[in-house]
Structures are given as C-alpha cells and as structure tokens.
Image (tube, rainbow, N blue to C red; front, side):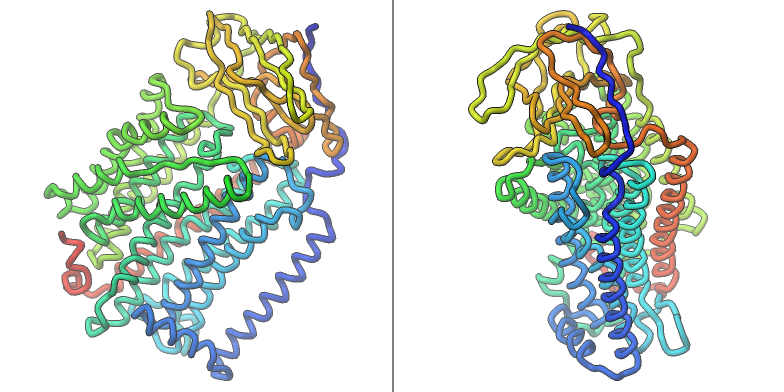
Length: 610
C-alpha cells in the first residue's frame, strides 16, 4: 500500500496561546507582586522600614561583602538554580508529553517563572539597598540615589527574560506553537537567565572594591561562590545545546561543536584570567556537579527523558595549559589562542565523551564544516572572555575601539555561522519504502520494527550524521515518552531497526535523515491531533513516502499560513532586544573598567597574575 499522507490544518482550538482566564490570573498576580515590591523599595528608600537593611547586614557579615552585594547574590544563586531546574524539567516534559494543556498546567513553568522573577528582583534589590554611593562605577539615578552597575545589568537581564513570557504567548497566538528550544521568544528567556550570570560577577567585584583593602580576607566559602559564578556562566552559555543533550536536535549537527566551543572559550578563559591557576578546571567540575544533580532529579526521580551534557574538561585542560605560557601576560591574545585550542583540541577531546554517551556521536564527515564554524567563534569568544576576566581582576581593557570591535566581531561571527548552520536541503526526488513487522507488546501499545529502503540508494553517504527513528511525545504512564533508534545499515540505502518502535497512542514517530546539508524526515506514525486540526498519519504495513522538511513534523503545531514577512518582523524584534541586552552587558564591563583607578591591579587580584 502506497501513498503520501496529508496533514490538514483547521481552525485551531488549542495549540495557540494560553487560555484567557490564565492570562488574566497571571497578569493580576504579577501586578500585585510588583506593587508589593515597589512599596517595599519605596519604604526602604524613605527610611520608613529597617528590616531590609537588617537582613542585608546579616548576609554582609557572612559573605564579607556590602549588604547590597551579599543579599542580592544569595537571592540570585537561589533563583538561577530554580530557573535551571525548571527549564530542564520543562524541556523534558515537552519531549515526553507534547504541548501543555495551559501555562499553569505545567509544574515546571512555576520554577522557571519564580527563578526568572527572582533574578530580576535580585538586581532590583542591589539597586535599592545602598544609601550611599556603592563604589566608583555606580550610576546616579537621583541626587541621593546611586545604583551598582551589576545590579542594573542583572535587573535588565531578568526583565529581558521575563519579557519572553508574554511575548511567547503572543508568538503562539500568531504562529502556533513552535515546539523547539530555539523559538525566538524561548531564546529570550534562556539568554536573559544565561547572561545574568555575568551581571552577578560584575556585582561581586564591585562589592569587593567598595569594601576596600582593609576588608577581611576572602574565605573558602566566598572563593567557592566565585568559582560557582563561572560554573554558572558555563551552564548559562550551554543551555542553547539542550536539544542535542536530549537527543532531539531540530537543526544541523554542526551547531553542537560551535555552541560547545563558544561556551567553553567564554566562561573558562574568563575564569582563568580572573581567578588564576586551576580556575577553569574547578569551574568545569562544579558545572558538572550542578548539571548532574539537575539531570538526576529530572530523569530518574521525575521519570522524564534523560539528558546528557558536555563535560568541558578537555577544554578546561587546554585553557590551563596555554595559561602556563607567556601568553597569559597578554590576556586578550591569550584568550584568542586559548579559544583556538578549545575549538580544535578541546572539541576533539569532548567528542570522545559525546561518542560514548550521546544518542548521536559526531561522524568524521562533520569535522571540516564544524571547525569552520567553531574555530572563529571560539577565538573571538575566548578574547571576550579574557576581557571579562580583565575587568573583574582590575586590569585595564584595551582601547575602547578594540574592545567594542571585538564584541561586534563576535556577534557578527556568531550570526554568520548561525546563518550557515540554518541552511539545509530536502531531497526533491527521493522517497522511502518501509516494511513494518509487528512485535508483541506487554503494555498494549502497537510496536513494530522496520526495514527501510531509501531511493535513490546513493541519497545517503557512507558516513551520515544519522539515519534514525525518533518517537516522542508518547506521554504514557511509567514511560519517558521518548524513543531513539539509530538504524543499522544492511545494504546500499537499506536500513533496519535495532529495536521495536511505538506507532500508536499519542506518539509521533518519524524516520530522520541528516547527511551533511541534507536534513529531512518521513512520517511513520503521527497521532491525530484535533486541537490543531491534524489528521492521524497511520503506520501501514507497507508504505512508500517522500522526504519532507523535518520541521513540518517536529513542529507540527506551527501554523503554515502565516506570511514569512510577519515571521521575519517578529524575529527582528527579538533580535533587537537581544542586541540591546548584549550592549548593556558590554556597557557594564566598560563602566566598571573605566572607573577603576590605575595601580590597583596587584592590590586586588595578585592571584590572577599566576
């Protein structure tokens, strides 16, 4: 039996935005909470309450930093971990169960929302707490009110991330639900949280400078928090890779090495320049611990799909070894060279781990294009990481034109390689013939194995990125809702299953082929979805189906009728907001650097010279 399945889209009764009553409820709650916080801030600034000062002083005594640093940093650490847990759990829930019944029906959303709001509140607390001028870099807001740069940048990152929630609802109402991590409004929430870790580092160093040379020596606990900050930067820059970590990437595999190299070069170089010997390794180890705890809580404990994550140990070793050379005395050049090492040797070392545990190891065919994408980005992010470390260790940055130029080049390089990575081909005259064989099942769902013949047989090379079956959003009790099977090649263009696949219930099961620039799929079984007017695509015993773009299956809830111009406008708005956030982070670093008096480097951070 042959045929091409048609997926029809009717008027959407669900799969768009959040229900109106939930929107109203969340809006009312946000207004009430915001009003309460504004009232507390006004009462504190008016000296009508003292308990906020008392609370800040308690944290100041414990962490040996001014209250406007100690209390906000404690709030930030709690909030960012809360948001990270909620984020990983939310992704796993979508992979296993599909879209939400509503914003309030997903328990992970509470952790994300509380975490992001906590980041914003932590930044605002740092701005509100000080009565005097909090350090030389402080920004004057009124005649008797100045705020630390780190607090302003943190609040800005938190606000940017929070804006993603209402914009995400608007996005879904217009375009349908783009079930991917890389949806533009999703990237706002991810980016705001991720980059807020740099704001926390800014705030901490402002507090250290404000405390002066007579402040108590940093203890082990405070040192750990500093290493934890860069572990947080590493994790924050790594969340863009989560689809690869779960084994459900919706974009070409060459993105993964580039994203790993960029995160490692930025965070690990900054840690090494600021904190000295061993800092890159310690940051990577702490990041492994945090990601491991969250992964364990999400998968075995909550019975959700498992996720792996890069270790970054190879990259950390490369960063540490290059720091043993005289290059460390020229931090920006050191960062660029370390980035080169991360983007080559570091990636090769990371590939050994990915090949051992990830669903999709890197084939040898990926390396030429992967290096062309990863190396320039890693070099530039390494140089930017060095400048972050210089700001934090009180070393003067290069001339403004050079510093800003490097940031602009980094943004352009990331944009260029992203544009290349987003290019893919769908075979126009290729098809797949499948023969399904029934396999007995204990839980009542239909399970089959498949013999697959791709025509023409030379459509796929001898070393493809993957030829696999993905089943997801099964949503079964006591089941993770995720199935991945890398097919075994038995002849030219001929493949077969290595284990039975689910083709009933709410599963969406498809054959995926990724070979260089080819990224295409064939539906095997797609459950009917009345909420978006999509008919069932049945799994037939014998069927021949053409290749289609993966996105039409993986993001089945997206509306195909929206003009591309409207999509472009939405993406450009999000891009403008993102560039504003990057500009704010760059401004913060420049202001802290320009406010630092000369000659303080050795006094504040002698260990960074090691």
